[in-house]
Amino acid sequence: MSETKKFMYVNRHAPYGTVYALEGLEVVLIGAAFEQEVSMAFIGDGVFQLKQGQDTVDSDMKNFSPAYRALGDYEVNRLYVERDSLEERGLNEDDLMPLTWEDEDDDWAEKKSIHIVSRAQLADLLEEQDVILNF
Amino acid sequence: MKFSVMVNEGPYTHQAADTAYHFIDAALRAGHEVFRVFFYHDGVNNGTRMTTPPQDDRNIVNRWSALAVEHDLDLVLCVAAAQRRGILDADEAKRNGKDGDNIAPGFRISGLGQLIEAGIQSDRVLVFGD
Image (tube, rainbow over all chains, first blue to last red):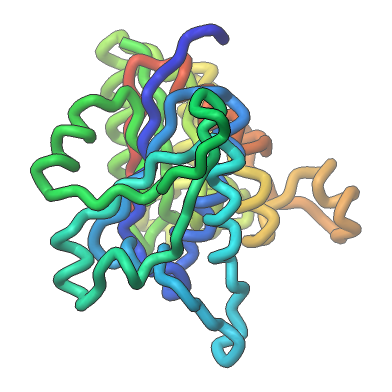
């Protein structure tokens, strides 16, 4: 399979109320092995998936938030977070995990994976994709 | 056109499985190709033969099985999602030490790579969910 397509995973749900975020992340991690052009979008309650300091001890749910830190190692390093969704929930970029990746084409410089985008910018990004899977 | 379809909700609770079925049926009748149908999240519950709906309602599982036979359709249940929800074929039942299997005819269990491959191989991927 030499063809490369643009895959975007659109995350719309908070991390623990439903299984969509967890099982969606599993698709991203498996899909990383296929060497496609991958990005993720976080809209609506999906922005909560990237929130810092998640603590699930009292709810007895599996805290899978550390797995997002591994995305950079899987070359999943374009995470687009919609600004309006953040603001509507009283959040800003500083509330999110500081996810990074190392750019081998730039002397392994550490770069930010999270990009805050407007609704219009996200619409343009969606337009560019070949495959959109939403969770 | 070559389609693949992802079904993310179980039968009866959500209409997604019905809509996906009717889309696929219509696409095939119109001469299109359906490369694969991939069932994920609660969508894997579309593939248990133990489903027993009332007589006067549609049988969603049997409907999938019949469509698979008629069109040689590839119906794939995600193994990780299926294991969480107790959907097993004979091999999975044996491997996990369970006392029986419940997969419906025409379905098979495989990995998430099948979904990504469907995305690469198909002209369009349609997601039916909530």
